[in-house]
Image 1: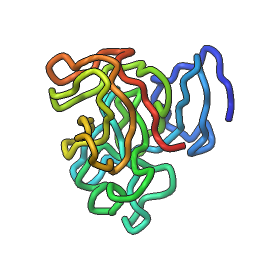
Image 2: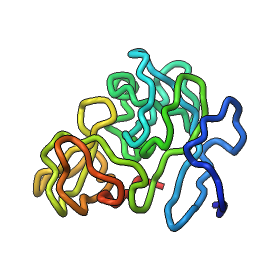
Image 3: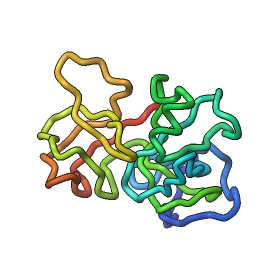
Image 4: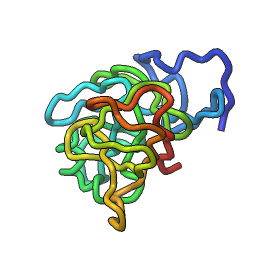
Length: 168
């Protein structure tokens, strides 16, 4: 794992300037370098929203390639696998571009929710592209990806109100 200083984690890369899958640490937060695939639904990434890895059974997807298109990820069976979540996008990536997802620490960008998040909720992915939802008590998550430090405002958790913990 590399420690970076003064790195613009919101930068969109045309080329693979880091090793795909490389984890870097900045200000006690961890980020992973990924390649973006818009999926069958041609969904572009939205900064702050969650992305998914696509299963190995999906044609044309390489390791550390991710999408925000829930249906494409589900079609590749990644959604039902452990460590299906790629992290929270730091930039609005488009097909074939490279960038970072945040995988640990306090969220740097507001996150999309279903509007039902309360303080202390454990969170997982919803079925809407890029959305996170609270887990019901006693329900095992597909993957627990964080905890809410505040209630959401409408359909967003503000910066710093989500403690992210995505599989490493």
